[in-house]
Image (spheres, rainbow, N blue to C red):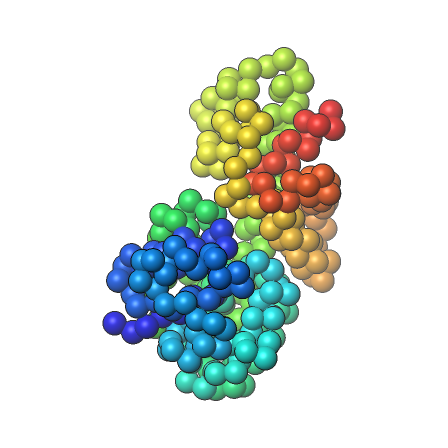
Length: 288
């Protein structure tokens, strides 16, 4: 079985890489802080010293990085992905804007490699369970070649055409999710302030047309004022910012998303960035 690389073992990447290892793939990993590689190393993964070393040892490398700046750094740094690109394949699962994805894709292609963007829909638990949704775009031959790996990490994958399509789709999805979460948090705060039973609210919502897995999963913890991180609030706010920038570029009015972004920004300023994005509820409760 071909050796596969994985760069970025954060809250998402560690689960994704773990599922590749569980499916029997020979795995090489790298992370900026090596301590995060230890669990996979114990399971038999090889730990590389640099991103370039991962590419040297693998024909295909996946990455899941926190933001556009880190995604660019891992590719363009002196010991980065771009140093060993001819004949290699790079699949970037990071959530970045279209401009970032195109810069990376163009550089990889110009160096003789193949590039696929593949941002994911899902959070920590789906990453651990192998039930992510991959929104791919770029080199179609690489999309076909990467399917066994995508299927080891996810339940569904969709090809969306040329590079940029995956990035745009992911920002739209996360913008909708963030706006929904902000409205949900406001509703829970209003219900609590109205002396309503939050468990009754959750039951009513779940029985009607607004029933959805996010409310069902997050609601009980939010009612307790607990926000264990599955998708960090700082990442949700970053995605809202990028989605709003896309809206500005395309002259699409987005007043609801803009208002939600302000709530996430306030929560982040209050030190809630590393909590789950549902912690926007804690910020609203504090403000009432």
